[in-house]
Length: 265
Image (cartoon, rainbow, N blue to C red):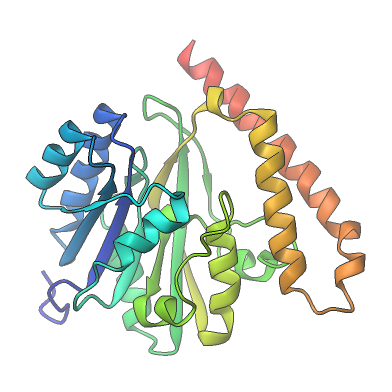
């Protein structure tokens, strides 16, 4: 381990309902692998009723925090409130994965530039059994597109300075789908965003859970967030570019969904 890395420097927040035990074990194994390179504190946020998941998380060295049961944003905020001396935040879903060396790569980016507040890398899209469907490597373009087009900064492949995240009061608890997009936009005035095209994480794509209704609600919320962050003079014009981007995102999601369904048939 690099001696320059301070103990406990990364706070990894893992919210879960505790109902996907097999995936959770796999996720925890990839968190454990990061400990070879990075000193981290894992905070697992889950309901008190998730007894098996709580025992598994504790056995993996996690600090277990009760889920407030008021939505995903507040669950992540509950994990953030467990901070002690950590400098950076990283998020992982209970069925997503860190790739080997992922966290150290992001941490190296942030420690190399004191003016940077956020670092992100490439993200694999994997099917329910872990096969790679494709990889997002948007690089610096994702930062430019954030307020105008699709959000190509993957939450499970992102690291943020905790002081900056606390300065914006964490994640907006009114949001259900695009709370990460909102946080990224609010973080922009605090410093630079850095990126690597190296793959640092994997997002698990569940084709049967991606309903049309869910995609519409997510798209509506994301567009409202982006519109709110635009200069007032541009807000009425935003449909001119947001609607084409939304159509492209729906088409891309449908293609990945179809690919995922073919791989599991």
